[in-house]
Image (tube, rainbow, N blue to C red; front, side):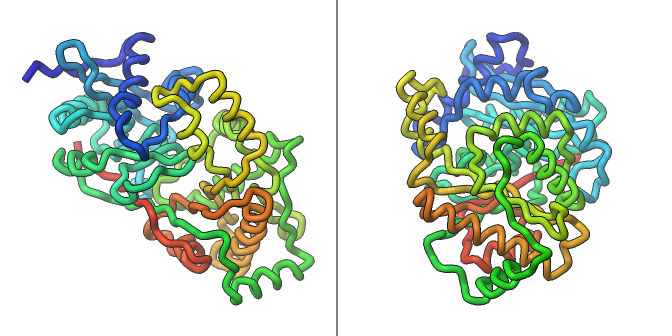
Length: 386
């Protein structure tokens, strides 16, 4: 077999190979969704993605006879280093991710190179995969390969998890998504809980104001940072990341699908629901991430008026001080029900996907199951001492 080399990505040409490799390796997988190439370039470019303002990162390419056959990122999030070790990240913990490989030999070499880089940066533990942060595409898929992911979720080669385990990694967390038929009526008990909340003058569930979406995004992220602060793997959003995320999500945002719950006039909970961009993207985007002009136009038109759109709930949260109260579950059910009705009536949706949800997040698991959700995809995060 030809000699395999792994070298750091240096310059635009290498970055182009790093980006393009994912499209080529996954081209034959009908359930892999090709993101826009321009989005992928931005993701891995310091100065354009605010993740790099608090992270060190090195990308690597594996080649045989000059041909790219694999890729990986190695990175260290300074914000994550400051967190308690028992919360998932913590001192001495680095990450790698964005792995794509043609075979196990390539994967093994890439992981070894990422580990060596992390050691050189003073890390003694790898928590992986992370592509790039816990807020983007954490984990490697281990279940649900027979259908495409929804927007902002990853789809991986089924072989990858075995290759990671063979490199000495132990699974530490499982992330799950829950599939829900939103056409089904809400269970009577939940209907009564929702009705009780609607009759409570202290509670108000409102749409986000698109004309002031930047300000609304600040409110949502403030609740999120508070609600998730004790969660495993949590890393706080910075102000720059809040602004960046608001700008990126704005084309997908519809006021009736993102709701904020207020109690006594204070925003205390939210639910973000997005139309599944992956469905039209699979039809209209080129397999190389470069849609034709007509395909791009159709994609933009769909974004303006998504119809027959299934939906994903990527984020929701209730302020920490309320999380062990009956009010927390009531607000969650109220948000879920009002958004479900809009999704069915206005967007003619049939399915929703909730998550990801940590396997041991009992509160969120209970809510997902109470409204009829069942697990349809799983991702695992692994750890290894370096």
